[in-house]
Length: 248
Image (cartoon, rainbow, N blue to C red; front, side, top):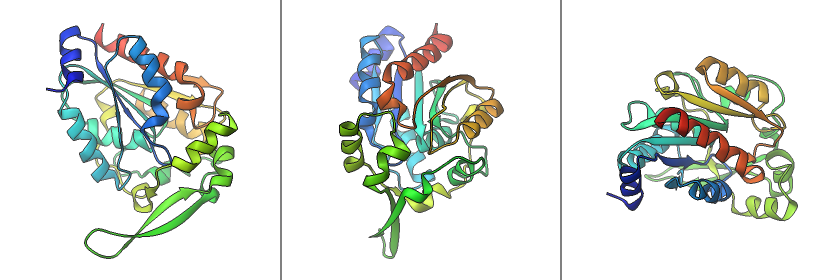
């Protein structure tokens, strides 16, 4: 049993699992992690592989299965797609928190939901980089052009921090955005959603559509897509609210 699992079991406080999305990495949760830990939550920020929806969900599920006690999962962006797939039927998961995120229906893809409503500007800022795939062949990684990163992804983050985020961004395999969901954990697990109204990666109307469909408790915030960096306290507040509502 991990130290985090022991903490959760001993106190009854849920472990918070954080799942980053494309063009980010686990450190994008640093401000949220610090806030949650001050509140007494054990926290795990998962390194999402960003290789494919099924592969990423299998990896996340292995992390969830290693934990004991109640679990609250928060997913940002594509991390929400992975969370919905991985958490279905996972023991101990009591709440899902979608942070500027996707919550797919079975048969839908992340790319499909991103384009469902007008307003997304991320696509035109992406560029492909071929890489040698395991077992032969070639895959395609997608990156955000560094000179456009702040404008489309992190407009309310200070320029120096946004520059660091652009340089350390994790690319996503292009096919992951087209992979179809086979599970939808939000159908059986209570959910909370943060809609970011200045988001140029996922239109706010798309987030509202998904949240309403899921019967999600929803808050709206004047923030960019990179809300975990620009408004970590607000994100931690929502996660805390979900934890209290499902474990008190």
